[in-house]
Length: 127
Image (cartoon, rainbow, N blue to C red):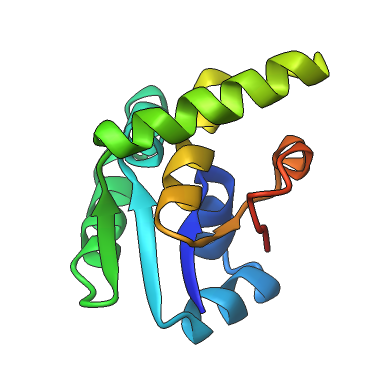
């Protein structure tokens, strides 16, 4: 399985959550959307363990199975479609999560997340 990690899924994995550990270890490839990377680094900067958290993240990113996903023009098209869909349903989600969902859809990845609002988007397969 090829997965993308949401911020909370990465945190769960790093805390040793058994289900997250199982999923990450079994994944063929692991993508970290750049938005997630920003959220993680912001959380590290606001916390009191910034250097150790950043070092752990660097080790994780160094794995050959891990890549960072960057948005491009195609991502913007997915973003627009998902935005309109959610807006017409009257159920928006946070902007960062909309970008994360757009990248997962674009790259046909299973999104590992604890956020239930992704379930409003049938195009986004979650774990």
